[in-house]
Image 1 (cartoon, rainbow, N blue to C red):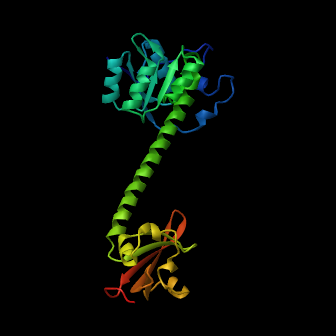
Image 2: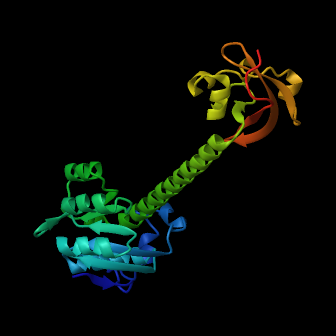
Image 3: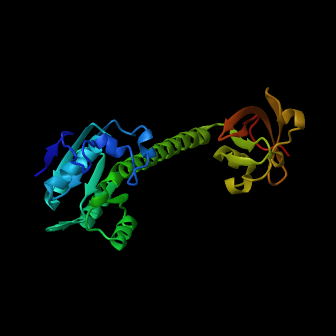
Length: 287
């Protein structure tokens, strides 16, 4: 059974008159806690807490609600409820005790890494030792916090959420790049003209298409890395011309093909590139 609670828990502290926020404003040595000067990654937080002790779960929620007032904690005590909540609930974070009757945190970690590897997983335990903590981190845990040092929970969660968001951003950027490269490659290969993508600084060809391979009579690997003047008889003026120019395309066997070359300057990843589109002026090879 999943037990839900929503930011109404309070944390009892030893010092008279001390509240959660003042407690969190200093570190364990009484110094200002710089972690709290940063804006939280999320304004709300949904937490799946594998914890068999209801009081400990309330302490976790009370601590985190000081940072995320809109936090919601879903407490589960066994494997079946943990798996069900993991699959059915939309959670931002998993907190887990290390040892519990009939189910333990390492098993939960394995399940979470298999099914929801993108969700940060933190151990909050009073029994986890240093060796066990190191092993848990090797197996994919994001961090661990000892129950008697619960003040570490907020900075640990904050860091875990930031790392998770940064990882997600990298994944989105890489996916967008892959999609962009796929579209570029499809368009590049569909061009009816021979195409050479040339580094403006070195003059070397960094990409080409099948039409260029066909006209030159060589493979892509034999084109890339060589300077474009090995294939195009362009003078310095023609190489920098913004208007179409006619020249000879030089095949590997020394024969030539008359082409019209159009230069287009591009900037990609901070590099200046020239896209040279070469339109064959007549069919066949001119010797």
